[in-house]
Image (cartoon, rainbow, N blue to C red; front, side):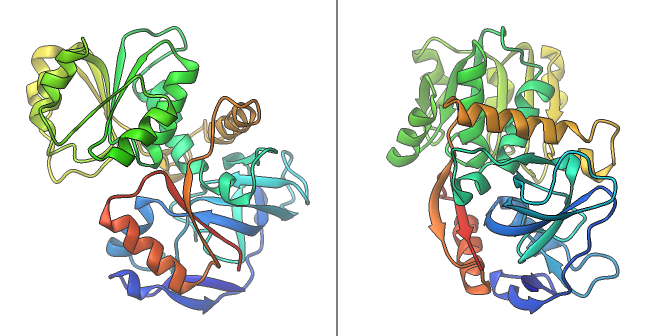
Length: 332
């Protein structure tokens, strides 16, 4: 089968067209014919830092897939051939930048019926990250009141987090964005307020009546904003992070009895936790909310086909750090 992979770490130029054997599904696996994928920052991070998987000559990236189940493993009970699915998969298996891909059925959901392939591919990783961050790491419930600050609201995770918090909780949602287009995007996603993270954020928060924030989601540049986070988090508040700061000192948060939590969407599959199937359940709920019109896809750029040249272009754009929403890539 056709795939896009690399054999040594480096710049986007290391991505190349390769031929690999068509995968064979394991007992709990779905064999999926890939129709669309999307790009996430994790793709570029892995490409720069991690070589091929143990025992493999190539590494295939791609952790957002929408496609059709072609075959199932002997122990599969949740899906059947012909089902349309979407999922983010596992970090330590080959990714979805290939014609066919295997995924554990417990990590997949039925594709939203109202979305096309590209729209569906824009959702899984960011929806799972945002859901886990909001409801598990921050501990928010549908009845929770107060304010949520989303630092980096126009990215893929921020786009989903704003929507989930606005539609499913009583929180006042405040996002940060520094450009006119990213500010408009956050407002479209449902943010009550948008402040500029390139300007005096404490002053802007005071101006809108929220000088202290009980729930903060720091999605980018957490080390850069460290002093602001220490100052702004309310006493006994919760701060959740997803990025990879060079360093992040949690001691200044002690006097506030703060909770500091990290969210990493791959934890459940990486450590084979007993609740691994929750990710499939979350995706089924996301699909329902999409089909009911409560959530919307976040694709803002479409490329085709799925090939080395296109993925190099998508990686380069992601690394420039100015993306709004998600870039999706369709078809081989």
